[in-house]
Length: 71
Length: 177
Image (tube, rainbow over all chains, first blue to last red):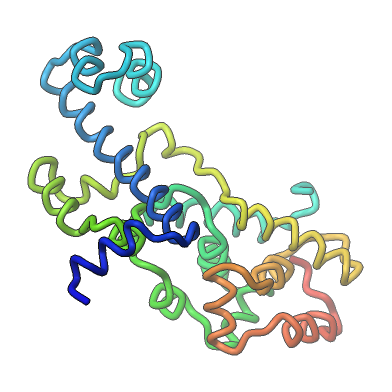
């Protein structure tokens, strides 16, 4: 089995323990990447509204999530 | 429950948080409690570990890769964490991806369910031994209950719950703490 096939098999794994753990790990990774990008955007002078539009979520949601850590 | 913790046991808890923070973990896990114990030399729990030949080095060797992200789980989705990390570091500098999320977490990192359970088990171990205090030795006994990395690590070094309970029970003048 090639690597790609192995990965595809795992990605569609029917074992909930494997699949759910993978999704949880992905969520953590997404949160880290989002924070990096939001921080960078703020450093470059983006408004909360601009960031929210780019993330396709509401301004309130972005602000609530990052205000405390990024100001 | 915490008011029954000895000075040493409280220090273990504080140091566990520090270990988790330094290792960029999201939560305090049982292995951080184990590392905290090892940083309290001279306390009963740490002495028992020393007698068993378990030191910080041994524990670190047995721990999963540092950082908050699970490379193996992500690989199951076809995501190469190393590749993502390299890209993030190219743009945002070394360690960018592995920084704990949210600086406000710096002061306080929560305990994960297994670490919470471990502290409860420390209380139960103390009750079992009719001890009024919860000391570092009870934290060690609690860590020997299976179900997490720290317990597996200790088992690998031949430290068992039954044998350690015996040593703690037979200690003539119970250490305080």
